[in-house]
Image 1 (cartoon, helix red, strand yellow):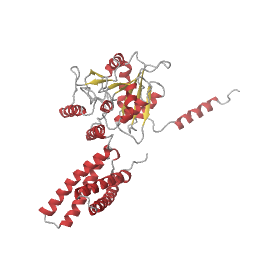
Image 2 (cartoon, rainbow, N blue to C red):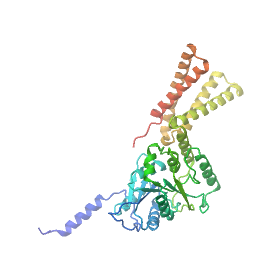
Image 3 (tube, rainbow, N blue to C red):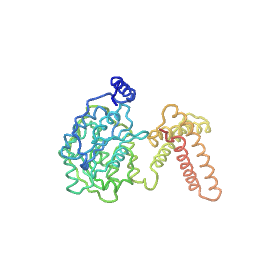
Image 4 (cartoon, rainbow, N blue to C red):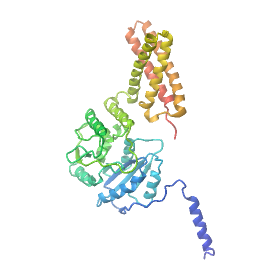
Length: 403
């Protein structure tokens, strides 16, 4: 039947389109000029890129990948941790019209290593590259890395800044020193000898990843160390040099948390199969708390001549506060409390640890009355209270926040 009101119909469709437009979508930008993919060709290489506030770097990176990977069937998998700058929305707008671009947006989860793992697991490609979005990694060596891992049947090919033709670029001396230190420490857990275990730029074979996936820690920022340390056999690995470039846009994510996460990873790889790594850190913080307690007690009782009971009570509160604050920064850094929750968490911590101290004394006294040597009774009480404090505070004080 002939449409009698074509103009009104057009206006209605236009109005409906405007009303359904996402008000939170990223501002329109020129779409990167990416060659269309061949829908029937199998993907040879997936490039996994973890992102957080990297919207300005996305078009530059995609154009660079398209130029470097010409002749290779590739896809880019971006794993975004709910960036407030609209990175995910911008990527979604590109992915809607280009099958080479895929997006995984995570809510309530964060961390570079876990993002890389999720991205790799979502890929069906036989080889997966991991690189940053900030253009500091040299995408032009990706074809060489892919060729090497194929021809030599390797598990991993690493982009190294420490080989003869490579370089750290404009890294500060402090950053270079930290990277070198991290490399030396990595030999404690890695099952191979690589010059740049701190590299975040590599290509991994799908079969090897599947082999180690269930043993990955997934914590922190050093996914390569995790992959190397999780193998139960010598890893077949090669390195290709590249020069680390300067970040042009965005802000670096490197801070003290990176170093803490690396410590967490190393402890987990060394003893994590026997004792929970978080519990080890909790006990270490508690040991430092004993030093703080005794130091405060000595200052108040011996130096300031305060009554012993008052000195002991104040020292106990100081030590418990110290333990809480340090645990909040180190042990439970991924669940760190802020604002009002920091205050309520401190009160919960006081309560839980007070009950733990009571259990410690009661259990130790019970064992001592039944002829158990004093040192064993004391150690047993300490173990009981440590396990109690860790368990209760994990559940109550640093419980996981709901999304």
